[in-house]
Length: 430
Image (cartoon, rainbow, N blue to C red):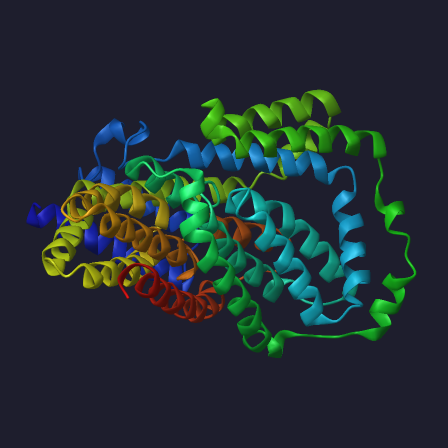
């Protein structure tokens, strides 16, 4: 690790993170400024940062987001989100915690089979619509859904982007993740449902008169174009099936999302201006800047040095190694965005796991996966889903501050990481 470039990268990243956290300057302006400064000082690998490798812009994430934003923009024109909002309000009888449990449950069930970003992009518009119907703030419900999606996504190979990276590097299959990650994910998810009851209790509002108005509504009347909705649902089903089978068919999830968006636009002849207006351009730009910032830390050897320190600290104490991978990843992933963090650390974990017996080596991989997945709840910028929902909320006129999200996220991360740690000890080392 070269000293001066590394120090410069750490200083720029730290100042940018501080500015994002304090929200004194627009977060998109901050990451673009920091990325530009890193490029100017030669801390990122020039034009190579635009190509697909472990320390550059992750175009898979960018194009997955773009494709899904267009799909959501087209589906929204059918009125189905309003229909689902009225249905959810009626099913919950307007009771705040019951509504949260319903929305979080939908999110938690969908997250293992879709990626987190897709899940929250489909659930967030419904949440905003139902909360408007009931005259309550959508913010606590949106935060709870993102936290739930980051927990639920840990269950499968395709549920969370870090799992895809780890599965590829460690040669772990969809079934491996199901057997080793799904049991603890169910426990963590149920614990989160209980935790949410207490964390958000001061935000719960019940307006019986608002519910009375919603109770007698005909939900089906909200669907403005049934024929268009049918075509949308067929395309959406094809996209979801392709997501689930992407490792079998050998097509990247980003390509599937873009093809799905193109097909949906084609078969529905949707209003171009309307669906393009739904694309969160500031969110996509924020990701581009963030990836370049993390590339600066990676290229100057900062993240690798942290990994080497962790490796030397582990030695032959494998449970201590698993512990450091869980808690270390939960902390570091929260600051560096867990996708580039996982991509950078995976080769280091591979080296550590190679020196252990196969059973212990796998235990180290599962520890790393749990820490990386759960770190997504650590801060407002720790996972793609968090950033997307913050963008959706801001557009809907209900902005979520960095600290409001993060204070709930930290509590959730601590609880779930402790459960994960206990699970790893009981299953692999006890």
